[in-house]
Length: 191
Length: 191
DNA sequence: ATTCATTTAGGACGCTTGTCCTATAAAGTG
DNA sequence: CACTTTATAGGACAAGCGTCCTAAATGAAT
Image (spheres, rainbow over the protein chains, first blue to last red):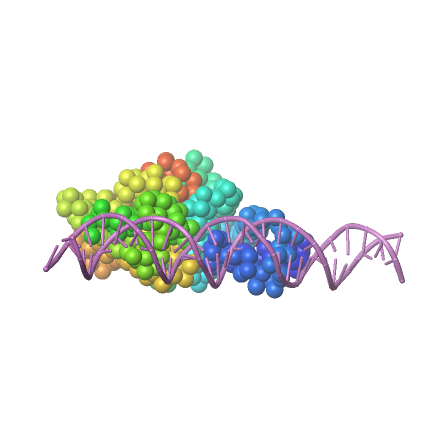
């Protein structure tokens, strides 16, 4: 069940393909080609395509948890930790310009497909949002920590959508700076 | 070639279906069912599915132009006109919560499909952005009018994505208010 | 070495997709 | 009326899809 197991390879390849092409547009043949495995053999490891999607979301949730834990460890203060979140837009800039935000684009696609897994995809949003809420709370913003967190998530989603559409690096940098400033001004006026 | 022509009905039905289900997930059979027309008969009016998409984008561009013209006429000042833009999030709230922003979700889907029409879908963004740029310029913000416009478009895109994910009316109202405040503070400090 | 469970390959299935073709119906024109 | 253009219906098509099935290969245990 490790990373190099067949199952692990399938999930990894599906994860990337779902991100770059979308869930529905990715066929079993696509994944099979990426993993170099027989098409019919999928059904030994997964019982349906939706099953693979579930596994992909599991993987993304796990990776997100790891990321948040790393930020928790690396950042000295809640402010610098929030800065880590904002900086994903720069760190993953090229991927975001090419395929959008992996969280937002999946959530939207599953909504349009009326897919059962839509709530599960939203867990990724919740993960970021809860973590950010914790950071703002640690900064003394006890009453409106969640509102501030949601605001930040929304801002970054908007930047991701327009970065994907216009592919303008200056725009991304400007918005990242603006978000950083916004954080600064909102942690001094506590509660 | 009017609204009640077969062609017009096809484009109208396709427009709604592309919005609620997505472009790729909408089949000819879906549109045929909505318009109550023979499936094979499409190819008298359009030569391919991409051709219908083109017509749908044309329609959306035209409708957007009408909308902007209406705002231009209705709003007394550039500030109130910008307010009209922000208020789409409230006016179209239920649709946005159900299917996201029609502009943003189409742009993202076409990116993932590596579809030829992606640049055309971006024209919708440009339409709003240019109009907003004009409003900010009319408020004296000659040097950074476009940056302010892009910021506002990004903010509203982010709100749309999260409104779709979380379906939280209070969140939308809060963000709309915050955007309105942001406009107020950015028009007094001219240039 | 033999047995047995695990894993894989590859084809067959039924269905849906976008596209195309041809026959028919309706509308317009002389 | 006859005749031509416009519009529609409905089936045929090849290809792709997710899914399923069976036989073969692999590997571990006795």
